[in-house]
Length: 132
View 1 (cartoon, rainbow, N blue to C red):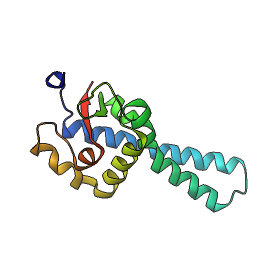
View 2: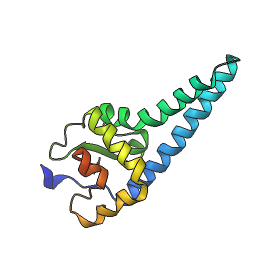
View 3: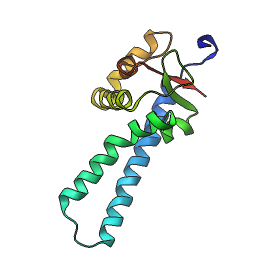
View 4: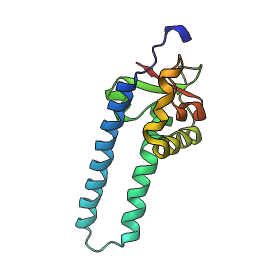
Protein backbone atom coordinates (compact mmCIF):
# COMPACT_ATOMS: atom_id res chain seq x y z
CA UNK A 1 0.00 0.00 0.00
CA UNK A 2 1.28 3.43 -0.91
CA UNK A 3 0.41 5.03 2.44
CA UNK A 4 2.57 2.47 4.29
CA UNK A 5 5.75 3.66 2.60
CA UNK A 6 8.08 6.31 3.93
CA UNK A 7 9.82 8.30 1.24
CA UNK A 8 13.56 8.92 1.58
CA UNK A 9 14.79 12.20 3.00
CA UNK A 10 17.19 14.54 1.23
CA UNK A 11 19.84 13.69 3.86
CA UNK A 12 19.64 9.94 3.13
CA UNK A 13 19.79 10.56 -0.60
CA UNK A 14 22.88 12.77 -0.23
CA UNK A 15 24.50 10.17 2.04
CA UNK A 16 23.88 7.48 -0.61
CA UNK A 17 25.33 9.70 -3.34
CA UNK A 18 28.44 10.37 -1.24
CA UNK A 19 28.96 6.63 -0.62
CA UNK A 20 28.49 5.91 -4.33
CA UNK A 21 31.03 8.60 -5.24
CA UNK A 22 33.62 6.92 -3.03
CA UNK A 23 32.81 3.52 -4.57
CA UNK A 24 33.14 4.85 -8.13
CA UNK A 25 36.45 6.57 -7.36
CA UNK A 26 37.68 3.37 -5.70
CA UNK A 27 36.61 1.27 -8.69
CA UNK A 28 38.42 3.59 -11.09
CA UNK A 29 41.55 3.53 -8.92
CA UNK A 30 41.44 -0.28 -8.72
CA UNK A 31 41.00 -0.37 -12.46
CA UNK A 32 44.08 1.77 -13.01
CA UNK A 33 46.09 -0.47 -10.68
CA UNK A 34 44.97 -3.55 -12.63
CA UNK A 35 45.92 -1.88 -15.90
CA UNK A 36 49.47 -1.23 -14.62
CA UNK A 37 49.87 -4.97 -14.07
CA UNK A 38 49.40 -5.53 -17.80
CA UNK A 39 52.01 -2.99 -18.86
CA UNK A 40 51.20 -1.03 -21.98
CA UNK A 41 47.46 -0.62 -22.49
CA UNK A 42 46.14 2.00 -24.93
CA UNK A 43 44.72 5.13 -23.32
CA UNK A 44 41.48 4.69 -25.27
CA UNK A 45 40.86 1.38 -23.47
CA UNK A 46 41.50 3.02 -20.10
CA UNK A 47 39.15 5.88 -20.95
CA UNK A 48 36.37 3.60 -22.23
CA UNK A 49 36.53 1.42 -19.11
CA UNK A 50 36.49 4.44 -16.77
CA UNK A 51 33.57 6.05 -18.60
CA UNK A 52 31.69 2.71 -18.58
CA UNK A 53 32.16 2.41 -14.81
CA UNK A 54 30.88 5.95 -14.32
CA UNK A 55 27.90 5.62 -16.69
CA UNK A 56 26.77 2.08 -15.83
CA UNK A 57 27.30 1.72 -12.07
CA UNK A 58 24.14 3.57 -11.00
CA UNK A 59 21.74 2.38 -13.74
CA UNK A 60 22.76 -1.28 -13.49
CA UNK A 61 22.45 -1.44 -9.71
CA UNK A 62 19.21 0.56 -9.74
CA UNK A 63 17.57 -1.60 -12.42
CA UNK A 64 18.69 -4.99 -11.13
CA UNK A 65 19.06 -4.41 -7.38
CA UNK A 66 16.58 -1.61 -6.67
CA UNK A 67 19.35 0.82 -5.81
CA UNK A 68 23.09 1.31 -5.63
CA UNK A 69 25.41 0.17 -2.87
CA UNK A 70 25.06 3.65 -1.39
CA UNK A 71 21.28 3.26 -1.37
CA UNK A 72 21.55 -0.11 0.38
CA UNK A 73 23.94 1.21 3.04
CA UNK A 74 21.64 4.20 3.57
CA UNK A 75 18.65 1.84 3.87
CA UNK A 76 16.78 3.37 0.94
CA UNK A 77 15.77 1.97 -2.45
CA UNK A 78 14.50 3.04 -5.86
CA UNK A 79 11.15 1.61 -6.96
CA UNK A 80 8.52 2.19 -9.63
CA UNK A 81 6.12 4.90 -8.59
CA UNK A 82 2.99 3.15 -7.32
CA UNK A 83 4.53 -0.33 -7.57
CA UNK A 84 6.89 -0.60 -4.61
CA UNK A 85 7.62 -4.26 -5.22
CA UNK A 86 9.09 -3.54 -8.69
CA UNK A 87 12.40 -2.01 -9.76
CA UNK A 88 12.54 0.48 -12.61
CA UNK A 89 13.75 -0.71 -16.01
CA UNK A 90 17.33 -0.23 -17.17
CA UNK A 91 16.39 2.43 -19.78
CA UNK A 92 14.50 4.40 -17.10
CA UNK A 93 17.38 3.93 -14.65
CA UNK A 94 19.82 5.21 -17.28
CA UNK A 95 17.67 8.29 -18.04
CA UNK A 96 17.32 8.86 -14.28
CA UNK A 97 21.09 8.73 -13.81
CA UNK A 98 21.87 11.02 -16.77
CA UNK A 99 19.44 13.65 -15.47
CA UNK A 100 20.74 13.27 -11.92
CA UNK A 101 24.35 13.65 -13.07
CA UNK A 102 23.53 16.54 -15.41
CA UNK A 103 21.35 18.54 -13.03
CA UNK A 104 23.26 17.74 -9.83
CA UNK A 105 21.87 19.45 -6.75
CA UNK A 106 19.25 21.30 -8.81
CA UNK A 107 17.43 18.00 -9.28
CA UNK A 108 16.87 17.75 -5.53
CA UNK A 109 15.05 21.09 -5.28
CA UNK A 110 11.66 19.52 -6.00
CA UNK A 111 11.88 17.02 -3.13
CA UNK A 112 10.44 19.30 -0.46
CA UNK A 113 7.64 20.47 -2.74
CA UNK A 114 5.81 17.15 -3.18
CA UNK A 115 4.49 14.49 -0.84
CA UNK A 116 6.42 11.62 -2.47
CA UNK A 117 9.71 13.56 -2.16
CA UNK A 118 10.43 13.05 -5.86
CA UNK A 119 13.42 14.74 -7.44
CA UNK A 120 13.35 15.91 -11.06
CA UNK A 121 15.11 12.72 -12.18
CA UNK A 122 12.46 10.65 -10.33
CA UNK A 123 9.67 12.38 -12.25
CA UNK A 124 11.40 11.58 -15.56
CA UNK A 125 11.97 7.92 -14.64
CA UNK A 126 8.58 7.44 -12.94
CA UNK A 127 10.38 6.33 -9.79
CA UNK A 128 10.31 6.98 -6.07
CA UNK A 129 12.98 6.54 -3.42
CA UNK A 130 11.70 4.82 -0.31
CA UNK A 131 13.11 3.86 3.04
CA UNK A 132 13.59 0.13 3.50
